[in-house]
Image (cartoon, rainbow, N blue to C red):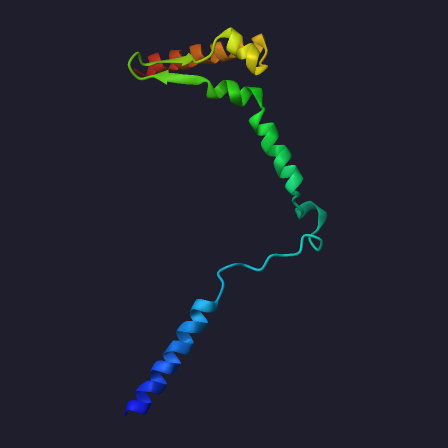
Length: 110
């Protein structure tokens, strides 16, 4: 009886070993084999990230804040700050217009 138990434990150990040795990764396709429209370049990803991080509209949008106490939106930058960031005065004025629109919508909903 002891030898049958040993064989069963041995077989269970082998099965468990096979299960844990499997990788959960999908095989990666060679990018040289992919058609040109499906190829993604690391350089293009870096360029896209750079463009996203330097997009003046996104930067300006990120400067719009909400004051919980006063229940209003405001642009958290002065004209000098905007100039230092390289954003045009026209874009700054557009940001102020957005803030006014947000505050108007906020008033209507209250």
